[in-house]
Structures are given as C-alpha cells and as structure tokens.
Amino acid sequence: MARSKGVLALGITGSESGPLAALADSYVYRPVCDLPQISETGRGIFMNMNEFLVTMYSLYFLGLSIGISNKRIGEDQAGTILSDCETAIRSIGELAAVHEQQAVEVAGELSDLDTIWIIGAGPSHGTACYCAAKFHEQLPWNGIPEDLEEWAHLQYFLTLSWKQRSTVIVIAPPGNSLDRAEELVEGIAGAGGRAIVVAHQGHGEFPLATNTFRLSGIANEFLSAFTYHLPAQLLILHLASQLGIEPYALRRADGYKLIRHGVVLDNAQNLA
Image (tube, rainbow, N blue to C red; front, side):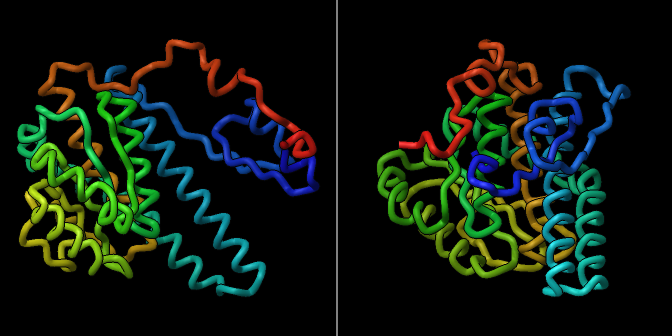
C-alpha cells in the first residue's frame, strides 16, 4: 500500500527469502542465530526475546543513521548511544540472575490470576505492549497494555471492584513520566489493587507497591526498552512452571491464515 502511493517501503527482517524482503523497496537484514545449546522447550522463548532485541537495535541504528545524515546528531554521540544499547543488551543475563528469585516469589503470589495489566508512558508504553503480548503467547493470560494516564481514568474504577485481582505491572524508568508512575502506584494501592513496579535502582519512590524490581544499569528512559521487559519475561516463565504449563511460545492452529493469507489490500486506491 505504501508503494502504491509512492512511499518508500523499508523492511527490517530476519529472512532474506521471506515475503517482507520480497515486497519492500529495500530491507535491513538482521539475522538471529539459533541456540542449539538450549533445550527445545526453552529455545523458543529465548529466540523470541532475541528477535525483539535485535529488531529494537536495528531501529535505533537506522534512526541514528538518519539523524547523522540529516545533521541532527553527530557521529560520536550516535556511536555512544549505540554502545549504550549494546551494554544494556549484554546486561540481561546478569539482571536475570539478580532478579530471578524475586520473580519466583512474585509468581507464587499471582498464580490465581488470569488477567494482568502492564502500563507505561512514552517509550514504556511500547515496552508494556511487548510484555502484554508475552503473557498472551506464553501462558496464556489476558495481558492488557495501557497508558499510565488512561489507567487513571478507566481501569481505576474496575480496581475499586476487583481489588487485588486488579494487578498492574508499572513500567517506571527514569524520565518524564516517572512522577506520574509514582502517583499511579499510589492510586492503584488506594483503590485496593496490586502494583508491581519495574524501576531503576536509584530513581523513583514506590512505598505502596506490592513488589518492586529495581534494575541496575544506565538510567536512561530512551534505552529502557532493552531491559525493562525482563521482569515480565521471568514472571511468565515461573508462572508457567508453577501452573504446570509447558514454558514455550504457543503455536498457531490456523497455519498462519489469519495473519498471512487473509484478504489484504495492497493498493491504497482501494481504501474506502
């Protein structure tokens, strides 16, 4: 559809022989290596997370390259940001080791649920959407992403009725929305719900949170998407284990018909 309107269509893909590479005007090839050393049960989980990380890195790389070309950012500054992205990615294993036992304990407190909210603002709303998708695909639970401000106007009322059943993961890195995240945690607790906070180890005050995952590393909202998904990933794995569910990404039963073979418009002129 973009091409039908003369708009450049750029793909970011892990397959040079797939439909995206074939359809796009150009593409960034970002392969993800297999992990044969990991058992088949866990491999899908790790591969999915790696796909997310490498796609994010590709987008940052592309955006920074455009910024250099447009003289909006210098090469040295862009290089520092990319280096910080790489540092954040490399820290995931260490962060998982630090927080895994906490995730085991929190999972034990949540095993009676079937619905969970993940909320954040700005870049953290994107992180919330990714975490919610993992709850759908790997447990599956009804993972619901929401913006911080919208929760205050909508799900607040549900929490007044649901009480602790209304459990909310609050993505709260340092940045413009940190003070609002602090207020939301207070509001969740005041309405009778449970707030599980993902925050930096040196920023934010959450005395009414049920649990708080304090992540070390660079205190930068712009880079938080690389690591702030991790507590949700750990929670899902340990919830699956405690519930007796095989902890691997679920498979479709429709042969991908709904997302690959449906009636899809390919020309913007045909839009209503």
